[in-house]
Amino acid sequence: MAASLQKQWLGEINISDWKTALGKIVKEWPYTGKKRGDLFLILCGSFIGFTEREVLGQKSPLFGRRTAQIKLNPFPYFEAAHFHPSWSIENQAIAWYICGGIPYYLEFFEESKSIESNIIDNMLDEHSALYHEPDFLLREELRELPVYNGILTAISDGKHKISEIASRTGIDEKNSVITFKNCVSWDTFQKNIP
Image 1 (cartoon, helix red, strand yellow):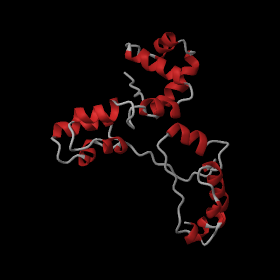
Image 2 (image 1 turned 45 degrees about the horizontal axis):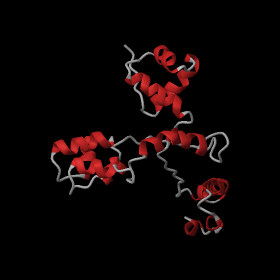
Image 3 (image 1 turned 30 degrees about the horizontal axis):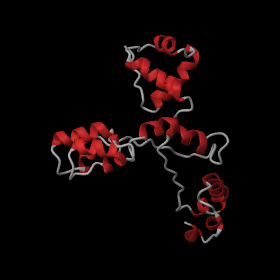
């Protein structure tokens, strides 16, 4: 990109400092990339809460400058099945179910191994990449992890109304509405209205 813009400003960025890099790109964009008309700045991220807070939030360089946003959903079964074409339909379905259609997770499952071996090697081995993934995702997305853990526990114990969950967890019912909206927007929960 720096070469195509014939500018050196990108060459000076320390990539480990993404906030500075993003700030420089956003600051220079109206004078360089946007004028050309054939360049687009596309930012991708898988952590919704982090992206909204740190990349698009009020204190970020991109606040108010977003022109589009696309939420990419996990692959449905038929697309996910292409990761393991030699597996039986049953094993493809099991892998899709376990990995939730997430391409990154599906890539860890090797066709040369059984489903059971893949689970043991990639999810149950404490040194594997996916072993700590649930905790990592929750810490990245959620500021108040014990609150969300309490909610998940209450739901797994059969509490389904906000008042029941709030009572069970000790969360203020009024504030819990925001927490539930976050969970619905992150596809953690699904709201069903009878």
